[in-house]
Length: 424
Image (cartoon, rainbow, N blue to C red):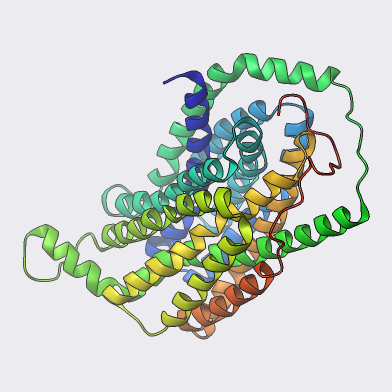
């Protein structure tokens, strides 16, 4: 494997680790902590909320530091920093302690999206496919969080779900630093000595189109983030409630008996969540290819329609059919992820790209954090069926916004706010 491919692989692994760290707690809370600590699932979600606010809030300073200092240097900080605080979080003995640990994890997790995506969209062509491939790795991190935590709950304890990924992330940070050390030094020198790039003139029509698309990007960013968080964070609990019969049957089949098994139920729930997440993540590859070929408008409309249909079908279902419908709405939830990043990558100028991604993810992860109280309140008051109805209506908002996109995006080459760098 040449250095260029290894570079892209390590960026993808970073996306994997980013989402794994932020969602380990979702499975741990759903399957064990509410019993071990004697606190309800809805109350536990409150302690995860500040971590997701940090996930969004610190995206902007992370993007600013990357543009001013070094993008690769910030990636090293991400790998090593999140690994250390994850290990510290494993020592938590109270909800307040784990809440503080999750906040620290969120601070370091905030680095990846504005920095890693800026690198991906600036260094390589075929932006749609590259973002999609990177997104698949992130979704496999989402899936692995449920799988790893579910397995360790049954066979080692939930604390190791933070410790083992933490050690791995620190090692990855050291490897990334060794791979990109010369690039980091060069980037720092260029940032210190590089001249400012002059702004270019924009026509009134181009400026109006750019504002229109930007408004749609940030609106759909907020709305789709609520959908993504509501589905990925709540899915282990949804499966724990609705698929226990199927999990018991699968456990009995693995044990070699004809009767439903009662052991390893958490593992089976984790496996089923992993399968849904992993298969649904492949939708991003299809979406990425279609983005490069057809642009975002039609793709966005198709993905939103899929979500409307499957969220509408989910209330009242259980076991096998619930599993199938959950796979359907997760295909839509994951498929939507590359679209806004693709649009920003096409419209944003290179010197400010990490900062613009930072703003995008402040919006995104603030919406993510806000959705946790929504999940807790809706679940505690009415149950998950009402949540599915809300998400179906939310997806309709996305569809209507996507219909307002132009057929062709405004680009920095057409009339840039800041001219692209020579490296692009």
